[in-house]
Amino acid sequence: MAAQQAKKDAVSCVQEARTSPDGQMVYARVWAFDDSDTAAKLRDPAPLTKEEQNALVQVHNKLVKCREIVVLHDMRYAAWETQYWQEAFQRSDAIFYRLASGELPVGIANKLAIESNGKFQIDASRGHADAVRVEEAQRQRAAEAMMQAGAQIAASQPKMTTTNCTWLGNTLNCTSIH
Image (cartoon, rainbow, N blue to C red; front, side, top):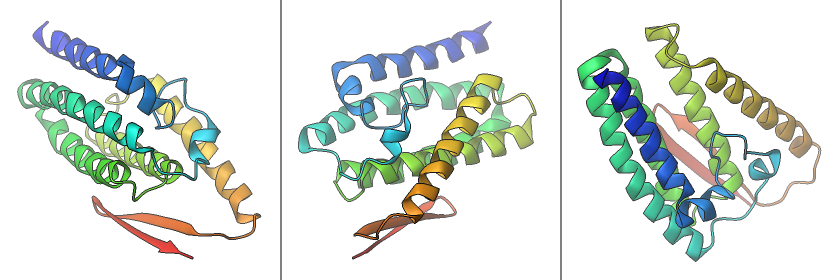
């Protein structure tokens, strides 16, 4: 019963951050892992505006509190999952800092978030086959399919200034090519 309540509290916490005015501003462009996500978010070539960056910081601060609920839950009821969450949070923070500073275009940040989420799902599923809800796995596959389709379109376009980012473990490595 307490474990289910902790999960509900975490979901409620995240929902509150996302539906706040700052959250609505941020998630209009940033990948939300819900039905509001579209391929246009993957093609977004611009960084966040200063106002959006400030809103992102506010949302991130709220989400850090949600993380505490997740970690406390896992330490009590699902310790095997804690490492995977901590790694996912580390990757999320790497994206956040670059996005909040304006160093990273939104589309690339969204792709990195999808990749990070996919890694989390794979890692968590190795621990327990039912760790990832079916709807979440389906949403992840759809996001990856959108990324793949976008990559094929981008490959056929003329090259311009490009930022390329890759994960080295849980560290984000980005370079810009002009």
